[in-house]
Length: 246
Length: 314
Image (cartoon, rainbow over all chains, first blue to last red; front, top):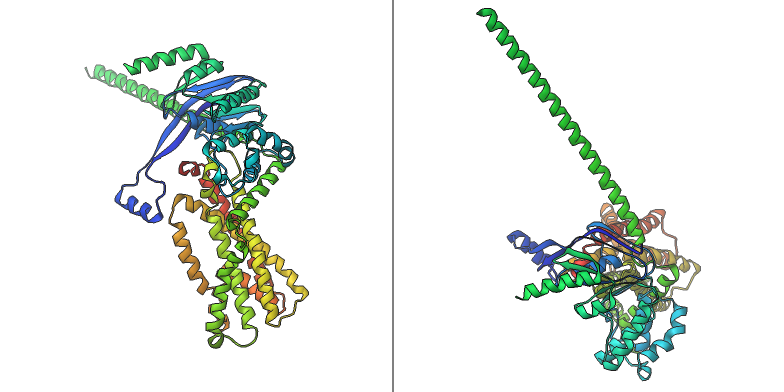
């Protein structure tokens, strides 16, 4: 068993409690207007994955898909239940984070690489490959702020594409950039996935899930609706969506 | 009649007794059952806790020493660079604030509070040490918030962000300390070997700043006006750190109150080595070690308690 998620529930807090100061906090508390409620973003979810499994997670917005991925990758601890994983995890939850606008492309590649757990030796070795794959050779010493958003995502993807994890966690980042780069990046991702990685993948595109996944987990408002063979669960989910439309 | 009645009564009494006994038995049975269930639930809870602890160890990417070192190096480089935004005058710029304070105090207070002997050295040590304290703690306050994006996406030790900021402030302190030694030399204090002992308070101060940084960075995530409140606090603390006056003007018992101010202890250490060329008492040494331990402990606890909460705020 590579991933073993058992009865996981994750509490989340919603409300107008961010970006307030001690002053407002106290004022709201006194007036009884303090608006922060705990709710179960993920409620009693269990599934197991073996080596090489590709899990697609489907569900409407706010179903708790990303939250569940965060628990598997270890960013947040579940309030109940256990997550057990065996092997190196790479979580590509959002490619664009962890960059610094005032540093050059080269410096950012090293920084982001360090966040992904690469070693210095490995990065020194692979740096030419990254810069070539991202097609940013002429921009090596540009500050990140001078790059277009497409260039940024190309760079971000190229750094991430060097991972060789046992467990890969993807949040709709299968492909980025313009049409040509999309093709290239998707091919690269598939290469990693086919290397025997266990993959957890969140997507709103049912077609993509059908194409790639062998197991599907369907969440709705935090609750586990179904987990199992991709075809069956996808069919159920499709039916559910169709009835909802009516 | 009476016999019959008596018999009836006896029978009913026996019946009642039996019923009572039976009820008692049922009650104790229930109690026992409840007890059993309770202990079972407790055991289950314990088992789950253990399991979760184990799972916690297992889950998430495992960072080895080499990876951590590399990340730390990159973080320190980033923090140091972003601080100076690549300006050529960057390092000089950061010295401006303590030096201006020093210059203003030298002009205003020399005549009123100075005693002729090495008042310049007295002022510069106080200012530089205090500036390191306020600069490092204020900078660490933003360690979590500034990295919120990454913290909510990748599993990293949160301590690393704090540590990298602390190191970049320490590097900055070394530059200002160089200026301090230059001014001390102008004040006719020759360099002596005891100066090397200053490494001790610097290390202690580094960890105390980090400990306070733990507390402040956690608070800043939860309450955005921490920044404002803390800046008031440090501005007031200046007046209680004996930066530009001598504490021996106060009566004896009041003088000891100053030791409750950790920054004052470090300033004392610096002055005693630099100006008096004497090694401070064991008491001062104890305080210099005690404060960092205290603040690191509190800070670590604050992080541990709020660890899961931070994710809601980014």
